[in-house]
Image (cartoon, rainbow, N blue to C red; front, side, top):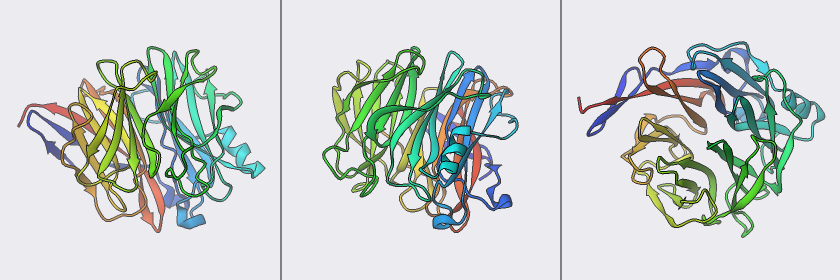
Length: 352
């Protein structure tokens, strides 16, 4: 995969060689879910990963604890591995285990959003929680519930100091995709740096068959929200709001020729980059200039099954200048056991 250059009409996306960030194979573990990353000060990043059983469902279950590391040079190097106390206590108590799939930061405070999984499994889920750190991950607050709805937080974004959270209200008692009229997406906001959250309202995305989710504040200030459709993996639902989720004034479907699961969206130097699992197998990337009309997919891997859960964060490129996208993802090493990988993507202007 070294040196892949994905040429477009007026620019190219350059993919560096992926490398192992967490070597679960060496320690006989897995790393299902939990790829949250957040920049809490310029060039200072917290990065979460799971340390899970390699035995339960062949390593594809989040039964374990959460680890994290800190980088102070925009992701070039990483500090010591730390274990999240909340996840350790949950594992010891045996009532649920914790995943951390999204995190944000406001004015130096790190806010991590936690999925509470069934012990020795994943689904059904309990209510989602959040925790905060005001000392760069040294200590953490007690967990609080986002709301009384059981479900999974699929994305969180910061806009003008406010934190916006996308919660899919489905406990996954039957399946993680919507199968009941109550399985709606709800949008929440915190106006006090993660001190509290209030519901803005229901996102008008169809219920049945929908799961996962992503959102993005666009350069014009509008908010786009996306959802996966298990019945049509080539068409991702979208809705758009021009008043930060109070109302929604447009909707549609994105065509994705190689399908998508667990979509993750980043904005790199004016180009939207979408990544996720390409259906049953493979890791796929798309790009777009408006976030709705996507290029043909670029498959980076095609032969591996239930993996390629991922996240992305745009950081300063301290050596080359400008920005670059750090993609963290899971990749199978045997059965359903995964290592955690890192890969950098840069945008290069021009057609050559």
